Image (cartoon, rainbow, N blue to C red):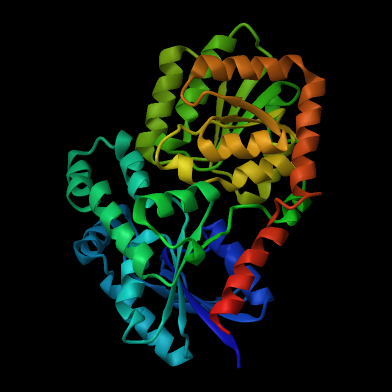
Length: 405
């Protein structure tokens, strides 16, 4: 009998690398994976994509519509359209395990648990209540701020998180610090929390290299930030640090990726206010270019602020950066500091301290041998060690074998 699972994602797909990796691991292990997600304009309502049975529903295609459904879902923590569609798929495909990606849809899954005899797995990609607090820091629209205060209140969602932890069959934590927090704050049963972290597949380094990605920056000492950009990412700290390095014209910072218009406007204003010419925004880039940007950088920087959100999650780019063989520079956000110091793959600066960040950049700029050693340690931990998805996915597969036994 085929073992099956339904995943739920409150976003369009493909968009989330964690969902892609987890679904792929389960398919390889012999599971039939269904995914219920949002539908974008022009997408099929159902198709098999990379082995995943994708089911798409219309529940918002622009920011206003998505905000409306956020409000609806926040009333009783149940998304009516996801609930109706999930119930239909679970029944038609005879699925008894539902895997929810992050907290917002957990209530929807739990509302079906008893009546449909389900096992519910809640996958915490991040500390969602604290993420809410962080994401809205730079919001300026008064209506958006009112909506967030009334319906996306961090304290209210923290209460719901506790209920979720108690009622779900299994909690997947993205990092050890998250597991510790759930046990401490919610008296969670440690035995039902499994850590499946955001390591990268070794195939990442097989992306085709493009030596022209940096254009006219080629030959400079390039410090690169890559990935999504938001208030919690600390890109503002990284930018501010470059004011202390104006006397070193060889040192340039590349910012690969994008954020909301409000976030990007704030960062461009920061660059202008500091009079910096050593910051370069490359905007959104396709994933297949990321290895090139990281590989041809001299330092890959992850400058996260340290707060309740960032201290309980870990980005894929930490492990991707290690795989490139280039030195890392990370903030003292708890998981980053712990992993980089344990592997010896980079330097750590005090989170939010632009002057300390600049000092560490200068240290790396002046010591090529140290950069090489740090980069080799990163390779040893990932490509030659156990900090890769090929190893991490074993925890996920073992969990599902137990659930479906």
